[in-house]
Amino acid sequence: MKLIIPTIFAHTKKQFNERLKKLLPIAKELHIDFMDGKFVKAKGVNIEDIPNLKKYRTVFEAHLMVMNPSQYVLALKKNGFKKIIFHYEAVKDKDKILGLIYYIKNKGMKAIIAINPETIIDKIKDFFHEIDGVLLMGVHPGREHQRFITKVYGKIKKLRKMNKKIKIQVDGGINFKTAKKLRKVGVDILNSGSFISEAEDSKKALKELKEASG
Image 1 (tube, rainbow, N blue to C red):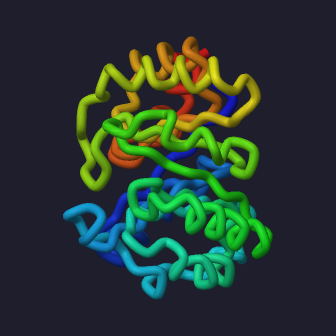
Image 2 (tube, rainbow, N blue to C red; image 1 turned 180 degrees about the horizontal axis):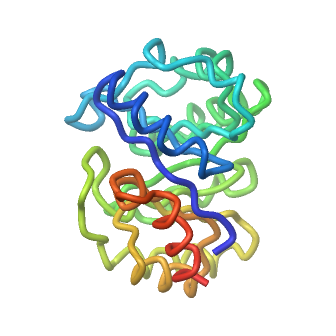
């Protein structure tokens, strides 16, 4: 696997700080989930509750599971994020999605579009030449400890057939078995949450996941 990025999924400032402290020493990149309680039922940590990330060498990406992703862009830029992942389902309108992509990129960050398991690949094909990557949810967003939804494998194959070069990320349901299979179907990046963050030895879990995925 080219890259496995651990995920910080946190409901509170305390939980966020604990997971950040645990994962910072072992990962060059970290994926942070933001949830507004509207796009998904769960509510996550607020941007104001996390420390300024510019002081770290780690590359941070923000996963916006929120209804109004454009409202987060400036704050994320100021906080030190390098990549923003927003959901197609939160915007839907083609012109608004293109506007958001350009807005993110004009602020010097990478723009990645995410889709839920039920959303078909054709919905995002018009954005392939504008975005820096696609994130496919392997589970329903907003909850940890879910089993990988197997129909997503077919979506990945279709996406890779449609575009040979686009960066493909998968988030959710990652374990030794799914990591290996996802690598085979053309995934570039895996985002792994509880499998790494809740492991007794997170460094070992990350290392073994990389080995399992090849």
